[in-house]
Image (cartoon, rainbow, N blue to C red; front, top):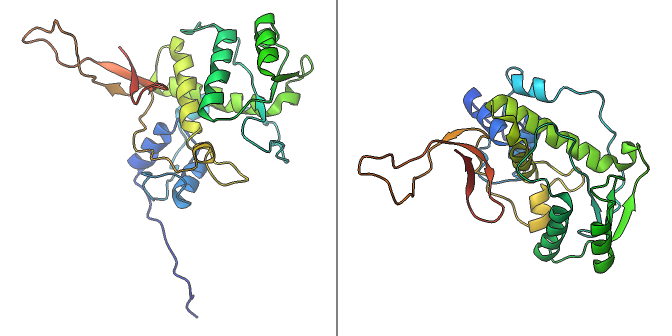
Length: 266
């Protein structure tokens, strides 16, 4: 007996297209990519069935791990920014461009308070000195933020952010392996991974991306590019000679958080 409901079959993406979107989305797993496409959670992602025909060498190098922390079963937060989990990656052997943690934390908190039009009520962190210092204590007290610190040497208590940090570092490590980028670009790789994951990771309870949960709309992801890809930005220098190069050679290293622009290293 024929079904009363139409059956929609998704065409298979080519191998090139499958791996291209895997790389554009910071080496996101194929199950999540297929979920994004099937459930129409973002726009401009072609509606195909994306196949992992073989192992990704960069993922095998960058994401090899033991058993992960179990997911948290109960959602505690009732509103945006009610509870903010924070942690810093490290220690890193290769210094990044910026190493001013307390000031960066203060700037971040001020920005999200304005952008999301909500107040940060509680911050949970470990006992690292980057969080437990006089500068941040005075700031938390001045704006009424309750700072909760976990026990020493007990990362399991802060498993929400520990698990997210692990995911970000694995993605960044994989991107660096794949692009063969210099290691001092690790901060840019993590920032890019965070940017794409906030727009592609699916929240289990709401079946939406973090971007849609915060902004209330689906994101067009057609602008995403592969970290480390070769690019040719226009040379706007005023002293270009008549036969000089009008374009520079650079590597794509992420997305600007203040402008509608890409970040290029050259």
